Image 1 (cartoon, helix red, strand yellow):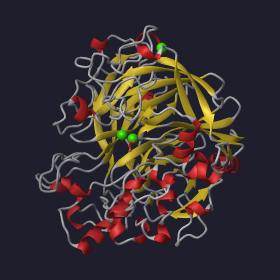
Image 2 (cartoon, rainbow, N blue to C red; image 1 turned 30 degrees about the vertical axis):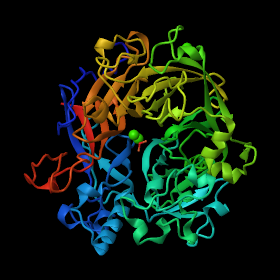
Image 3 (cartoon, rainbow, N blue to C red; image 1 turned 180 degrees about the vertical axis):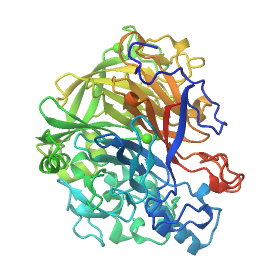
Length: 597
Ligand code: FEO
Ligand code: CA
Ligand code: CA
Ligand code: CA
């Protein structure tokens, strides 16, 4: 193992697993088990999971569907803690048999509302370094759903652009949608990005602002809500602004189950993948954020006020307001090689690197719009339009963006972009035509974490090195790395190594998605090694690396999503052991812990 591999999490890379295999695979010497599965009751008042008798009343008290962002936060002492998780969306095709009955579709629609959102669940164990169990009726247990109340904060709260018939204040929104990746703040709250919110509405956007988030008219949704719930029908004049109330970064306090979760308008509105916060040298906090769309942008938010160290109630309450005021920036990347050397094939430019410099272009300063022709409210609600105007660089679908807590360098997962080279031109930061396998950019702030200049270089050009000539692993020998495709979520271990989880390997390199270690320093830099593989059709989410305890946690999202109830493709995580042949034993999106055997 290399010098920077975490010593308490030693492993030999697993062999890649074919995309037809319904198995959760971990390295030799490790074992795995779920902590909690879709439908597991959080409260003793909830029924046990019963696939054949799903109800909204049961689901709101049970763990939700399609777990994505994950953190495992141990309390002092390490024997109790909380698991926090968001539930991005539902897969109706594997939750129910097909039907066209309107009443039944409405009943199911209400179940879908309760299956999305958030879960906070207490966890416990007898000793440190051993697997966790979740606690029914834990003090902090909570579910947030598409019907829970959220408060808007920041300059656009109360804007006319956010008002609807049901909320003439523009300050109180029902629910959260499409919660994808996220981050845990230095003050212990959870951030989550509202990503593909547009897909929940029937709408034909008619203003330029709305069109930038919904390029074509939509009449059907997978959840069916517009058919019976008027707020999801944005053709209804009373609810034309309802879509504007989604696409935000939300903040949740897992310590207080009675707290009102918030949506922060100062951080802009987009298909937010997530947000990750670091405290800068000057004490202001900086959040890095990706807008996950082909040819969209990379952003950062810098708070107005400074982080207060300490954990008293008063200090924490002050820190919890940091994301309500500050300035929003969007990234412009400039390459340092001649444009003629960027051919779209991935061929390395003559200077030996895809690299260059960059600028954070302000959209707001001192909390006020600096974009000509747009008010502050317009910049924050229609952030994509503002970024278009200032000349930001179109990127290959920015997913998770995280600062390395050890170095402050920022890692940007660019998952893929079928439109690169057609509706956008190749450039040194996005150098592959039709970018199928994605890449990872390493960004170094050159004027401090909250400054406006940076340097950057491409760390990884993903792909199977056996078949993709240009695949690049920071110069590490290509015959020694695991094949990797479509980087999505990133995390760091206590040594500052990068960990990447993927979403898209099955359709691009014919392998199940997985989790990969990437050392960043020394001779091992770029040595991509696969740690685990998720079952058929699943995406690897979450990752949480507790290397000092020899433990890794992932959220296994949409296992078996290409199946049906009649013909399932996956039985994860129980694999039929409870009730062989019964779909009720799987697939169930679940949070899994991996530990040394
Ligand atoms: Fe929900 Fe961008 O992944
Ligand atoms: Ca270069
Ligand atoms: Ca994601
Ligand atoms: Ca993704």
